[in-house]
Image (cartoon, rainbow, N blue to C red; front, side, top):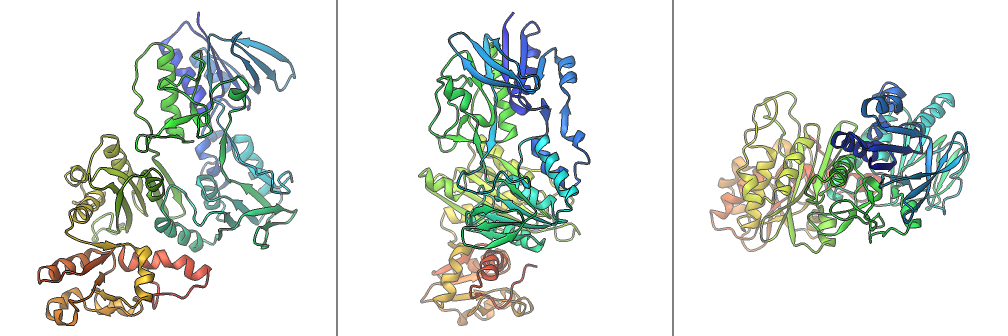
Amino acid sequence: MKRILVVGGVAGGASAAARIRRLDETASITILERGPHISFSNCALPYYLGGVVASEEKLIMMAPDAFQARYQIEVRVEHEALSINPAEKTVSVKDIRGGRVYSEGYDVLILSPGARPVIPASIKGTGLPHVFTIRNVVDIARIKGWIDQENVEDVAVIGGGFIGMEVAENLRHKHVTLVEAANQVMAPFDYDMAQILHKECMDHGVDLILQDGLDEIAETEIHLRSGRKIRAQAVILAIGAAPETGLAKDAGLEIGPSGGIKVNQRFQTSDSSIYAVGDAIEVYHALTHRPVLLPLAGPAQRQARAAADSICGVPHGHPGVIGSCAVRIFDLNAAATGLNEKTAKAAGIPYDFVYIIPSDRPGSMPEAKPMHFKLLYEVPTGRILGAQAIGGGSADKRIDVIAAMISSGANLEDLKELELCYSPRFGTAKDVVNQAAMVALNILYGTVRQVPVTAVRELVESQACIIDVREEAEFQKGHLLGAKNIPLSQLRGRVHEIPNDQPVYLHCRTSQRSYFALMALQGRGFQNLWNISGSYLGICLYEYFNDVVQNRKPIVTAYNFQ
């Protein structure tokens, strides 16, 4: 009888243990879990604060006794692994409730300790009773209890990642201040796309503070590095998570360059009898070919299955990760996969991108909404590298398509020809992802040249020739300073108004009509033409946050988000 000992439950440890039982009915399997719950929905924790998850019990996927009865796996909750002795194949364990410390033997050990919330030592006041982190059901219950019992109205959320943003959304009935030390929230998204999320937070009453860090927490307020003071009756630290590697380090297991436990393709550590899965390990990135940390539930479950298969002699592949993720932020759905501009640059991969804003359904459908979609591809191969999507519709659907294309090594031509489901209730006949591929191919093959929204301020300030091809009524509702309005419907009769001896930059609302105008002008011999990616809608969204919050001089006469 093989003795399997698992340290840690939830997506990694519990999944691995259950898979081993399905493959080996005779194995002796024991799970040690430091907390009181063996299996809970950690990704759903913030939604308990907003009442989306109705009760604490709804967060618990399976009670320890039910797990034990179903799988014949011994579950010891509130038992903490203190140390590992690889030579003797034992683990020192503490029964937290009883205080007893004992030794537990194993033939195979699986580590799934997860990641711990980051609490910088430099921040004063983190031990105060109204300061919280989020890791498990106990944590989220404490937060909700404090908010309800103390009648909390002012909440400070520190960190603009997944947890921070979800907490801010679920506490929308309170006054929330969100503080992020970086210049944007949601690191998987590029700066231009993050501006959409910034505006969404502001539109829903969140006081968003960027490029300012937490310095001190007092009883009724927080102090920022800038000297600014913010009232806060509850402070939620969502600064980040660090892999729990203490057990592994003390046991002499190798730690990788990213800071996670180093594992091979079978998820074995440097000790062949010890496996590791989940947020504590570093994984291989399929696009950058470098080790990374990826604290996501989906990869953790696949790692757990792969480790269990390896232990039981079942072959499996290990294609690496690409980091697909999704989040809902108030009324917007946001999703991303693969590389963004920051990670592509860091990996030294030559790339370009397109940013389009098509409707996610035909305009005749009442639920049609703009879909902001950014697609990155390798130059000159056209290999798809990543994508980001934000909109009121199915952003996750589009990103799932791109994730599948990346995983299959597809390029822009493949994406252009990809046949997808169509109905006006679900999408357009030429889906968002197909449109992005077509635009990208125009750029890749040199049919069209573009400038991004990030460069438009410089164009305006340098008094470049900008042609707005929207209709006159649209132009009057808001336009770029210095832009000339020549509607597409009048373009061919007013060609003589467009200079042919200097660069000309065209835009409309979302770049489609300006593309039509550009092609018409190129057909008439114009050469110095550039389409502004994202056009007026993208420009307004990109400039809005900095203009409003930093009181920067606007480059538009009025913001128009319609």
